[in-house]
Length: 416
Image (cartoon, rainbow, N blue to C red; front, top):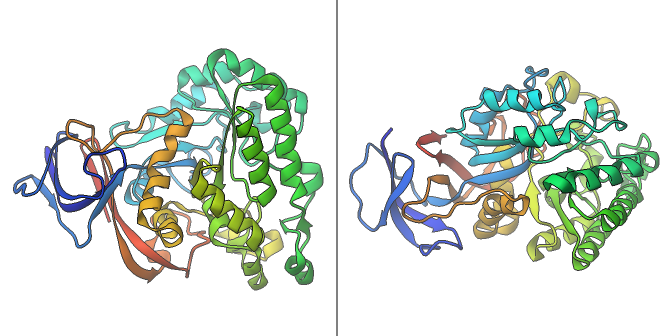
């Protein structure tokens, strides 16, 4: 396709001279050729009621299934899901089979995906096969294109291993991820430890499990220096620990999973396994603190924490069900419901800058990297809105606001 025309699109990009203006946008061969008031012709014209456009959405935690768990999600359908949900770039977690822990594993993932369709940055595992004992090929994986190193949802128990890893990657500006949960304190608990979960008879995990791990990790980071990311924090005290670390000048970023902003442990009285995620849903006090930290910038990014799980592992008794929820399809409407359209689009399109990735802006002669959506329709999110192969969404049956129309990246367009 050589030209695409967006008619009467409201532009949401604080870095653009057209921010909050409604304009026609002409894209030719993947480049924004013209932004004006009355552009008439193109090979493809998109004109919908209340059309809004922002920089292409990005997410810092996406899991698929290929290779190894194709029954959950394939790379091809995962890309389709992301693009139709407005995402044009994301980090791909290494929880595959085999685990992404070598140079060749990183290259394999990159070879399966057309870079003209989407920008996928693989994460390599920190340790070999997630064993928590032996560092993986960190330098070689970064040279192959890995953005950082993360033993997905598995905390680094060995403090000395984390110290050595942080010292080692400083020589090539590597980025270490550390899941915030002390395994010994968490034990076999599956939910937050609070009055309701105790009443329900569910084994509760104290917030200390998260906060102790973060405090330890940040103490090590202060000793070693280096770049460090804490994914999916979930408690009020965790926010304070990271705020203090940033005030000291430590190179630390963090994310929060969208469900922790939207839900609290109060929903667990239904015993519905769709609410079983890791970290567990916390209290109203925690959720309010997390939302405030998002608004003030202490939390650098919001992730949908997209994790497909096949039905036979998810639709079970709560205690036996697997953790995880998909989230790409519900990310924009859920954030729009919570924060409004301007903040939602900012959170989804600008957070990759915190990880050192290139960002674009909506200006003439810039590459087309755009998400298209309308912000005002209210509807019940259901399986008909899901493109993923797995349907394990925590947002099923929630009333959400706003719908994604599609995305444009280079010369490709995906529409719903």
